[in-house]
Amino acid sequence: MMRGASEWGLLQTIAAVVCPSSVQKKHKQHQRPSMIDTHCHFDFSPFREAPDQYWQDARESGVTRMVVPSVSSLNWDTVIHLTTQFAGLYAGLGLHPCFLEQHPDNSLDALTRRLDKRPRTCVAVGEAGLDFVAADTAPQQARQQALLEGQLWLARHYGLPIILHSRKAHNQLLQMVKAFPGVRGVLHAFSGSEQQGKQFIDVGLMLGVGGTVTYPRANKTRRAIAQLPLEHLVLETDAPDMPLAGFQGKPNTPAQVSRVADAVSCLKSCDRDHLVFETSGNAERMFGFN
Ligand SMILES: [Zn+2]
Image (cartoon, rainbow, N blue to C red; front, side, top):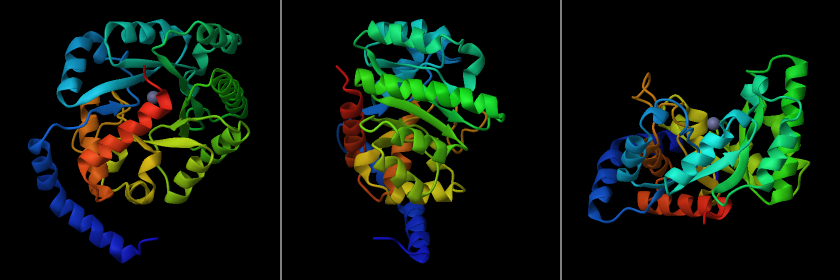
């Protein structure tokens, strides 16, 4: 059922007033279910300077697993190494659309060879996708599309989910995913309308929900997340990027996924533990952690 605009306004007001204390109370009552940060660039600064400390902080906040996507062949070794250093970390191997200069012509062949010999901690292809802000010329966009097409093919070939990035390219990305029926994955850092969210869900994708929903001005995305079905949502931070509201100017961290869970449970007017349990289950089924 669609909610009317006035009802939505009322819900938001109630959530703003009721949520903070009720969320805190639930934290204290019993053991909290474990959270999964499905998108964290843990090989980037500041994490690479003190990974033990940041992973400990994340664990203390209730995070038990984290997926670390790579951006180019230059950091594949690093992200795989992190997964051998810290139990609970998993990697994605891919070619990020914003790092075109790091993808030589044989990149897809190199990725294929790497995926052929992947360790069990490599659970996804990615980060892949389209970014028409970073690529504003036709040749750059064509290159991004060719790399994405190759990675969609590889994801389906290896039966791995694909981690997708999309900026100012939702429709083009949607058409490309549609051309690969059976492909699974996640559109990370979803922002958009309920209708756009449904379109991604309809082609077999999960939606990665991050810090965007903590900003009151992100009304369209907050409203979409409130309405979209929980069985298609996973939580993420995109740390060190995308700081949450109130934390602008500081690097984002995986421990903040806890605050994302607070915000989403308020938006959906659902019990926080239930939200974490369901979204963690979605992530476990998608990535098949073992
Ligand atoms: Zn990313």
